[in-house]
Image (cartoon, rainbow, N blue to C red; front, side, top):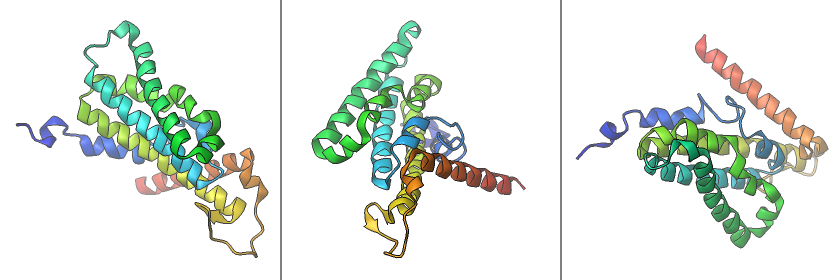
Length: 206
């Protein structure tokens, strides 16, 4: 019996790269549409992040398992069908159990099908690596994406409404920043986050 290290010697590396070194939003600048559109509140960012992570992990497991059976000529079409299947599951789950959140997320859950993060990981990694490595890669990328969405949503909700996950944080003295509830607020917040992220990376190299 092979141990975990023999099957996937770089599992920790594959998982951690999505959280920091190759973060989908802060480094690869992928998935910008949902990152900017649905992060008016932390719960929306969390929900979109979890839906994306579910689709990414499940599709990666299936594609990695069947990678030797998928003809190269139709691989993109096959990837899309597999991804669309899990997106449909995520979409109907949200509609059935969290209708209010699903309504707020609008078309952005179905649009996960064409999210560059998911299709890109299938083409670049899952279709070329074993199941365990693909799982760790997908989980790391999904969580890295989710963390940034929650952070964006929390900052915008705090400054725009005085709450975080609908819990009142700032008192009646606080005057909400209306811009944070608008698209401009998303660009401003993301810009500061990317700048802060790059500053930390620069400090680590010195």
